[in-house]
Image (cartoon, rainbow, N blue to C red):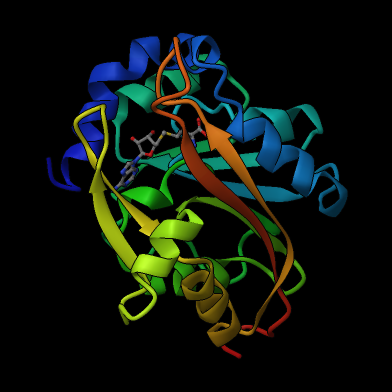
Length: 224
Ligand SMILES: C[S@@+](CC[C@H](N)C(=O)[O-])C[C@H]1O[C@@H](n2cnc3c(N)ncnc32)[C@H](O)[C@@H]1O
């Protein structure tokens, strides 16, 4: 299944998404929130890229941040809208850059459980750092490479590879070095990083997948 289908797959699964996440004990959104907590404050404006049903940004809304979100799936957005915590929700395919926001509009951005559907992250990362203010954080997850996978692909210049999943969609696993280099190229510091496992199914550990969370900080002036 190709990348474009990730939106229709989420449209189809939107009604069950929150329950399934709970049943699978899949709490990447809590990991990302806990790592970001010290860098945000009430009334900050935060953009959630691929907001889905709002599991990650709802935690920031409880801290009284102003939440903006975009997602390609109208049904995921409807579920999010029903929770009534977001200031603005937009339907938007994240492959269609530029992002529909002006320079330095947001204090912070998050992207939880989305970037593993993308191959090259160069354009989207550049766009994110265009729309967040200097000093703001971008907190995101990627599907991480295991040490065996990293060793096997060490000489591959791309820095990521595509792999099938049990749920019928292909995902991309990015190397830590690829992410570090991209952030460095954008003048961005990594404040924290943490690897964690996400369960792929409710029953056993055989479908667990390794993810990494990154909290990065944009220190550059706009256009810098
Ligand atoms: C695994 S869910 C994560 C949702 C939410 N961020 C969370 O933490 O629960 C992935 C989300 O990314 C969205 N998505 C996938 N590909 C996309 C694309 N090309 N453009 C916009 N949204 C996309 C899906 O519709 C879905 O809502």
